Amino acid sequence: MRLVHVFLTVLAMAIIGTGCSETNEREKSQNAEAEQTSKEEKTEETTTVSKRDLPEELQDIPLPTSAGKYAGDKYDEEKVEAELDKIPQDASEKEIQKKLLALLGENYHPYIDFFESFDTAVNAGGNEPGGVKAPKLPEEKKVNIMILVDASGSMAGRVDGGVKMDLAKQAVKDFAGKMPEGANVSLTVYGHQGSNHQKDKAKSCKSIEEVYPLDTYDEGKFNQALGQFQATGWTPLAGAMKKAKQQLEGESKAENIVYVVSDGIETCGGDPVQAAKNLHTSNINAVVNIIGFDIDEGQKALEAAAKAGGGEYSSVDSKVDLEEHFEDEYDRLWDEWEEWGNKNWDKAQNIGDKKWDEVNEIGDKMWDLAQEEGDRIWDAATYLYSEKDLDHAKEVRSAFFKRQKALRSYAFNTQKELRSEVFSNQRKTQSDVFDKQREEQRKTLDH
Image 1: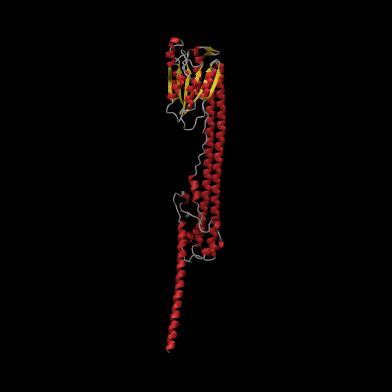
Image 2: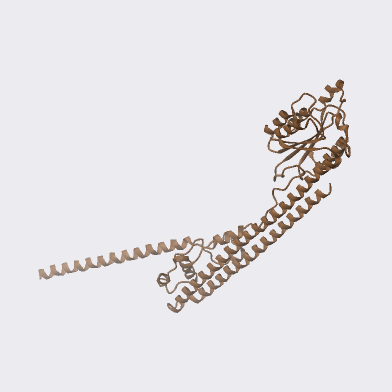
C-alpha cells in the first residue's frame, strides 16, 4: 500500500507538472498573440485617418497617412487572405474597414498636397530692353541716367540742318522720352555762363548746373529745363563728370549711365579720361557714353574718355547724321523688343507646357493608384463575404467602392481644373507680352 501511495503521489506530481507545462505553453501562446495583436494595432494606428487640410470632396472618406502593409509593390494575395482569415466573425464594419486600410490602403496625401499647393502662374516678360543707348532695365533694380550737355560757345555754331545747340536739345529731348519706364533722369549743363572769351573763362569753367534733378521723367519739367540755357562759354567736361559722380554717391546698388553730348575737347584744364575712369571704376560703376557733335581734332580725346568710362563713342556731323544716329537706335530698339517678345512668348509656352505635363502626370498616377487599390480592396471584401461569410463584408465593399470613386473623381476634376488655369494663365501672359512688345515698339515710331 505504501508503494501504491508513493506511486500515486509521483503520478499526481507528474500530472500536475504536465498541467503546469501546458498552462505555461498556453500563456506563452496567448502572450505572443497579444504581442502580435499589439503590433498590428500599432500598425493600424500609423494609418490613422487624417482630415487635416483635406479638400472638401475628400473630407468624408478615410485617408491613411501611410501605405498599408501589402499596398503597392508589396501586394501578395495569399498573405493578404491569411491576414483576412484572422478577422473575427463578429467584427464591426468599422473594424473591417480599418483592417483593410491597414493591409491595402494607399497614401494619397503626397498627391493631394501637390494639387492643393500647385502654382498655376505662368510668369514671363523679364529682362526688358531699355531705351535708346540704354541697357536693359533689370527687374526691381534702380536705374539712374545722367545727361551732360555741352553749352560752350562753339555749340552756337551751325551745321548742316541747323544750330548745334538746338539740334542737341531736340536730340536730348527725344532721347529722354525714350528712357526705360521707371528710370530716373538728370540733366546737367556745363559752360553755359560767362562767354568764350578769356576774361570769362574762370566763371564759365565753374558753371556746371543740374537743371533737372535726378528723378523720374516728366516731359513738361524736362522741356522747361532744356530752355534754361544757351551756348556761350568754355568746356569744363571733366568738371561736369566729377559733379555727376558726386550726384551719384550712395547709388552703388543702382545701374548708373552717363551720357555726354559735346562738340569739343576739354578747355578748362581738366582730365576727362581720368574723370570718366573714376566714374566707371568707383563703387557706383557708372558707364559713360559720349556723342561727339561736329568733332575734328578732339575726337580721339572723346573716344578715349568714352573707352575709359566703359561706354561707347558716337560721332555725328549734321542734323541728318544726328537723326540717323537716333534712327538706328530706334531700329535697334524695335528689333530688341521683337526678340524680347518672341523669347518671352516661347518662355510662357514652355512654362505652361511643363506645368500642364506635371499636372497630367500626378493626376494620372493618382487615378491609377485609386483604381489599383480599389480593385484589391474589392477582391479582399469579396473574399470576406464569399469565403468567410463575414457580417458587414458587403457593406464594407460598397463603402470602399464609393471611396474609390471619390478619389478618382478628385484626381480627374482637379487635374482638369489646374490644366485649365495653367492654360488660361499662359495665354494671359503671352497676351501681356505681345501687348508690351507692341506698346514699346510704337514708342520707337513716335519720335
